[in-house]
Image 1 (cartoon, rainbow, N blue to C red):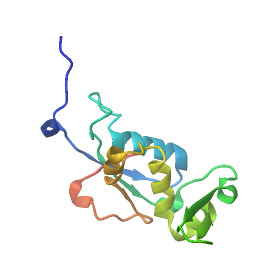
Image 2 (cartoon, helix red, strand yellow; image 1 turned 30 degrees about the horizontal axis):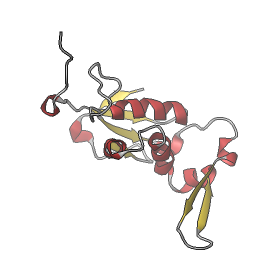
Image 3 (cartoon, rainbow, N blue to C red; image 1 turned 90 degrees about the vertical axis):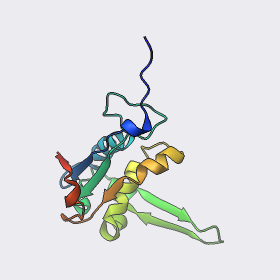
Image 4 (tube, rainbow, N blue to C red; image 1 turned 30 degrees about the vertical axis):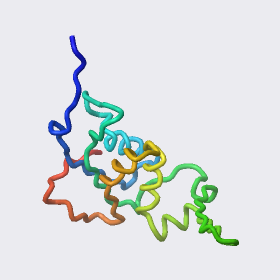
Length: 141
Protein backbone atom coordinates (compact mmCIF):
# COMPACT_ATOMS: atom_id res chain seq x y z
CA UNK A 1 0.00 0.00 0.00
CA UNK A 2 1.13 3.52 -0.72
CA UNK A 3 0.65 6.58 1.43
CA UNK A 4 -2.04 8.93 0.15
CA UNK A 5 -0.63 12.38 -0.65
CA UNK A 6 -2.94 15.38 -1.01
CA UNK A 7 -2.42 17.39 -4.19
CA UNK A 8 -2.87 21.17 -4.28
CA UNK A 9 -5.60 20.94 -6.93
CA UNK A 10 -7.75 18.58 -4.87
CA UNK A 11 -8.05 20.85 -1.81
CA UNK A 12 -11.67 21.85 -1.14
CA UNK A 13 -12.06 25.05 0.88
CA UNK A 14 -15.27 25.75 2.81
CA UNK A 15 -16.44 28.86 4.64
CA UNK A 16 -17.35 28.46 8.31
CA UNK A 17 -19.17 31.03 10.45
CA UNK A 18 -18.86 31.28 14.25
CA UNK A 19 -20.98 33.50 16.47
CA UNK A 20 -18.73 34.46 19.41
CA UNK A 21 -21.55 35.79 21.59
CA UNK A 22 -21.31 34.14 25.01
CA UNK A 23 -18.55 31.73 23.97
CA UNK A 24 -15.38 31.36 26.04
CA UNK A 25 -12.42 32.99 24.26
CA UNK A 26 -9.89 30.14 24.56
CA UNK A 27 -12.29 27.37 23.58
CA UNK A 28 -13.46 29.34 20.56
CA UNK A 29 -9.86 30.07 19.55
CA UNK A 30 -8.84 26.39 19.65
CA UNK A 31 -11.75 25.31 17.45
CA UNK A 32 -11.01 28.11 14.99
CA UNK A 33 -7.27 27.29 14.90
CA UNK A 34 -8.04 23.63 14.15
CA UNK A 35 -10.29 24.60 11.24
CA UNK A 36 -7.76 27.11 9.86
CA UNK A 37 -5.04 24.44 9.91
CA UNK A 38 -7.31 21.75 8.46
CA UNK A 39 -7.00 19.42 11.44
CA UNK A 40 -10.71 18.65 11.27
CA UNK A 41 -10.26 16.95 7.87
CA UNK A 42 -9.36 13.27 7.50
CA UNK A 43 -6.53 14.01 5.05
CA UNK A 44 -4.73 16.51 7.32
CA UNK A 45 -1.09 17.03 6.38
CA UNK A 46 1.03 19.24 8.67
CA UNK A 47 3.07 20.84 5.89
CA UNK A 48 0.13 21.78 3.62
CA UNK A 49 -2.49 24.50 3.90
CA UNK A 50 -5.70 22.43 3.91
CA UNK A 51 -7.70 24.75 6.14
CA UNK A 52 -10.99 26.50 5.54
CA UNK A 53 -11.99 30.15 5.72
CA UNK A 54 -13.44 31.24 9.08
CA UNK A 55 -15.74 34.21 9.75
CA UNK A 56 -16.31 35.23 13.38
CA UNK A 57 -19.03 37.72 14.31
CA UNK A 58 -19.96 39.37 17.63
CA UNK A 59 -16.33 39.50 18.75
CA UNK A 60 -17.21 42.23 21.25
CA UNK A 61 -19.51 39.81 23.13
CA UNK A 62 -16.99 37.00 23.70
CA UNK A 63 -16.85 35.67 27.27
CA UNK A 64 -13.55 35.89 29.17
CA UNK A 65 -13.34 33.78 32.30
CA UNK A 66 -11.54 34.37 35.58
CA UNK A 67 -9.54 37.49 36.35
CA UNK A 68 -7.87 37.62 32.93
CA UNK A 69 -9.66 40.87 32.08
CA UNK A 70 -7.61 42.73 34.71
CA UNK A 71 -4.44 40.62 34.71
CA UNK A 72 -3.64 39.94 31.05
CA UNK A 73 -1.50 42.55 29.36
CA UNK A 74 -0.43 42.86 25.72
CA UNK A 75 2.85 44.66 25.02
CA UNK A 76 4.44 45.97 21.86
CA UNK A 77 7.76 47.71 21.51
CA UNK A 78 8.54 50.27 18.83
CA UNK A 79 12.30 49.79 19.05
CA UNK A 80 12.90 53.29 20.36
CA UNK A 81 13.78 54.26 23.90
CA UNK A 82 10.60 54.52 25.97
CA UNK A 83 8.60 52.94 23.14
CA UNK A 84 7.00 50.13 25.14
CA UNK A 85 3.21 50.26 24.96
CA UNK A 86 1.23 48.02 27.31
CA UNK A 87 -2.52 47.50 26.94
CA UNK A 88 -4.75 45.49 29.28
CA UNK A 89 -7.28 43.01 27.97
CA UNK A 90 -10.13 45.22 29.23
CA UNK A 91 -8.91 48.15 27.08
CA UNK A 92 -8.37 45.91 24.06
CA UNK A 93 -11.91 44.49 24.32
CA UNK A 94 -13.31 48.03 24.58
CA UNK A 95 -11.38 49.52 21.64
CA UNK A 96 -10.48 46.61 19.32
CA UNK A 97 -12.56 43.49 20.11
CA UNK A 98 -11.50 41.86 16.82
CA UNK A 99 -7.85 41.96 17.90
CA UNK A 100 -8.58 39.94 21.07
CA UNK A 101 -9.79 36.93 19.09
CA UNK A 102 -7.14 37.35 16.40
CA UNK A 103 -4.33 37.31 18.96
CA UNK A 104 -5.80 34.28 20.74
CA UNK A 105 -6.00 32.32 17.48
CA UNK A 106 -2.56 33.47 16.28
CA UNK A 107 -0.99 32.12 19.46
CA UNK A 108 -2.36 28.64 18.65
CA UNK A 109 -1.12 28.61 15.04
CA UNK A 110 2.35 27.62 13.85
CA UNK A 111 4.76 30.56 13.97
CA UNK A 112 6.02 29.96 10.43
CA UNK A 113 5.28 31.08 6.87
CA UNK A 114 2.58 28.43 6.70
CA UNK A 115 0.94 29.72 9.89
CA UNK A 116 0.93 33.27 8.55
CA UNK A 117 -0.67 32.08 5.31
CA UNK A 118 -3.33 30.17 7.25
CA UNK A 119 -4.10 33.23 9.42
CA UNK A 120 -5.04 35.18 6.27
CA UNK A 121 -8.16 33.01 6.03
CA UNK A 122 -9.53 34.39 9.31
CA UNK A 123 -12.08 37.23 9.27
CA UNK A 124 -13.24 38.73 12.59
CA UNK A 125 -16.01 41.32 13.03
CA UNK A 126 -17.13 43.11 16.21
CA UNK A 127 -20.81 43.21 15.25
CA UNK A 128 -23.33 40.69 13.98
CA UNK A 129 -23.00 41.68 10.30
CA UNK A 130 -20.33 40.44 7.89
CA UNK A 131 -19.79 40.93 4.14
CA UNK A 132 -19.28 37.21 3.34
CA UNK A 133 -22.93 36.22 2.81
CA UNK A 134 -22.23 35.34 -0.85
CA UNK A 135 -19.84 32.55 0.24
CA UNK A 136 -22.69 30.90 2.21
CA UNK A 137 -20.66 30.03 5.31
CA UNK A 138 -21.80 27.03 7.33
CA UNK A 139 -22.75 28.10 10.86
CA UNK A 140 -21.00 26.38 13.77
CA UNK A 141 -22.10 26.72 17.41
